Length: 296
Image (cartoon, rainbow, N blue to C red; front, top):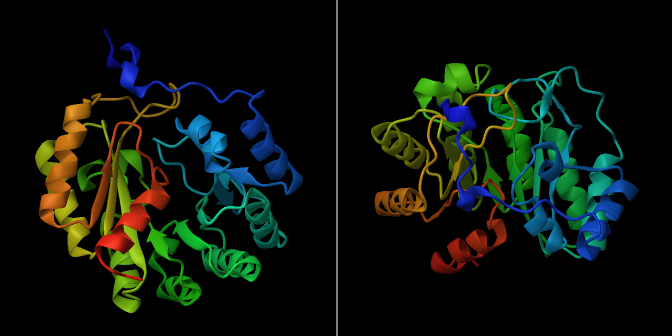
């Protein structure tokens, strides 16, 4: 049988968020009020039910159309709409209504904008802090085509956590994310840490695309050489038949082994679970890193 049609393992299944759930309806109402997108909806995140149930979400800024077309991602590629100048303020107001103390902000890739949207990220961070200076902010950004000027804008805004995902091993970049560059992404992570060591850096990879164990370990070493603090590892799940096939479903034990390898190599924290995604356990992981390393 073709691997595409293998039954999804039970440990990868999650219930669909109920529209009748009180918390779910509350989150959706606030998102609708401010005309906001979330990666939870647009990327079909398997943890959406759990997050909405806790009255939280990962905000997706700069629209919901990406200028790239990575073959693993469910977000639509194409020509995006112009940036919404009101979005930074709207995100801040939604966060205030949700009473969040830790927030994750991500975006589509906007190669059509000169700075890749770095200033829009900075404006969003600044608006959030106008409402509360105590909120801890994690951002998950595109590579900004490696622009140091764009990265300097992010550094000046000083989020608590800067995340840029490596996604996969270098051999698979051409098929999984053809418009990205492995070395450029490593350099983005290095640049942030080198120019503001106080910012916690983070990245994520997915497994199940055909990578080998040796390739995973070498990628971990490359990431660690870029001074990254936190690593997330999750199982690739095919969003549709138009996306890349799943080559392998890793077991729960496999993920435990990968976590131990990462910690042994020297990462300050590693979240390695079948359904781990970039923002999965983000607040808890951040707090553990801060506590263990006496960063506050």
